[in-house]
Length: 591
Image (tube, rainbow, N blue to C red; front, side, top):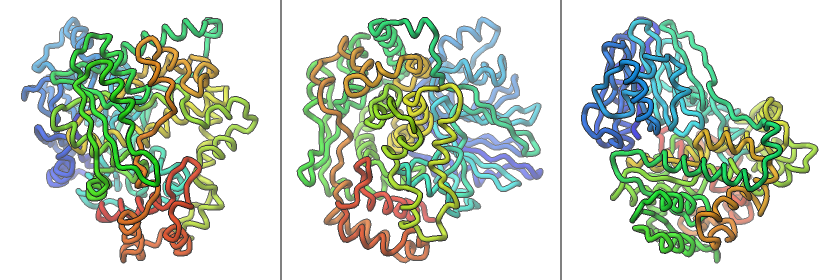
C-alpha cells in the first residue's frame, strides 16, 4: 500500500515543500485514496495513501504522535498489528486510530529500533524523532517494499520509486558502470545499494539506517537468513518436515488476509498460486476472487496457462476472472508498463502483471501472489547441479549469467565498461559469507536475498502499485523462510525441484497442477521479437537519444536486428529485448 517520500536537509535550510510535492505527485498511482505532507524545519515527509486497513482519516499519513514526538511515513502492511496493538495497550499506550500505521509509532516509542524485529509484514518507512532530530529509514526483511534515496551532501531525498526522485530534480543520472555490468549479466538484476544511476541508491533489505542531523549515518542489518541445522533437524523425517511446512504455510497465508477490504489471489495455474487458493479454501474462504491472464501465441509457443488456472478455479468454486490480452493491446501498453518500472526490468512478466493489475484493480484492492517459492524451495534448474559442484561460484555463473565479462566488452562501448568483473566478484563474495556451507544453500541464499528482491519482488510491487493494487507474498513470510532454510537441500531438490513443497501441496490441491511441466508467465511475442515489436525496439535503439548515449556497440546491435531469435540468453531471454528495454526505460524516464 501507498508511496512515501521525504527530504532531510543538513545545511540548516528547511526541507523543500516543492520537492516533496513533486515526488508525491509522481507516485499518485500508488496511493489514489489520499495524500499528505508534514514539514518540520529541516525534515519533511510526503505520503500517498491506498486505504486497506482503517479506512477512516484517523490513519491518514504522514502520521504524527505529538506526545511521543514521532512522525512516520509508512508503506506496506503489518500483518500482526492487532497482536502488537493489544500488547502495547497493555503497556499503557492509547490509540487514536484502528490501523497498523499508529502501531508502528507506538512500538517505536516503547522499544525504539528493536520494534522492527517484532514486525511481521512488508514495509518501508521513515521515522523522524522530534527531540533528537534523527531520521530512521527502515526496509522489510526481503525488500518487498522499495526505498530509494539520493543525496548530495546538503540534502537527502527518499521515495518509494526511483522516478519520484527524478521528478524532484537534481539527480546525477550518469550510468553506474558496475550496475550496468550487473544488468547485462543477471538479466537486469542490480543488487542493492546500487541502481543503474550513479546518483541514486536503494536501502538494502532488512536494514535500519540511522541518520543524524549533521548527515552522518550508520546502517544495521536486523535480520539474516540462516541455513544452520540442529541435530534435531538432521534427524527429522521428510514426513515431519512436510507437516511443519504445512503449518507455516497455513499461518503465512492466513496472516495475509488481514484487511478491511476483500483479498483476492493472482492465479497463474502453477503449484504456488494454486496452493494459496487451496489453503484459503481450508480457512473457509468462499467465492474467493481469482485472476488469470493470457496472451496470443507466437512461433507456436502458447501464451496462456488457462488450462491449469481453470482447473483450480473450478475445483474450489472461486469467482474467477480470465483475462486475455490481444497482441495489439499489449504493444500499445508496453510504453506505460516500462514507465511504471522503478528500474529497468527485462522479465516478460512485467507487461503481464501490469495489464493483469489494471483489470484486477477495477474490482479489488488486495491480492495474494505466489512469488518467492522457486527461490526459497529450490525450483529452478540451476540448483541441482550445485549439489555436486566443486566450483560453486563458476558453476552458478555458468548456469545463471547472461554473458561473461569478456562478452560484455564485445557488446558495450568502452566508456560503459566496468573495470572488473563486478558480477562474478559479487557472487564470489556472497558465497564466501558464513552461515551456509552447502553449495545449494549458498545459491538459494543469494537468490532469495538478492535476485528475488530485485527481480520478481520489485516487478510485482511496481506493476501492481501502478494501478493502486497491493500484492502480498506469503512465500516470503520470514518465519516460513527461516523454516525453509533448515530443511535439507535434498528435500527441496526432489521431484525436479520444490520437492518438499510439492509433497505438502499434495495434502491440499489436485495432483494435476503439481505434476504438470514447470511453467512461466508466457509472453512469447517478447521472446521472439518481430513485426511491430522489432520496429519498436529498433526505433528506440537507433533514435537520436540512443545514438548520443551510445551504450551499445553498433556491430552488436546490427547482429541483433538482423536475427533477433538467434540471440537468446542461457535462461531463454531475448538479448535484443534486454538491451532495448534499458534504452526505452531511460527514454520513458526523460533521461
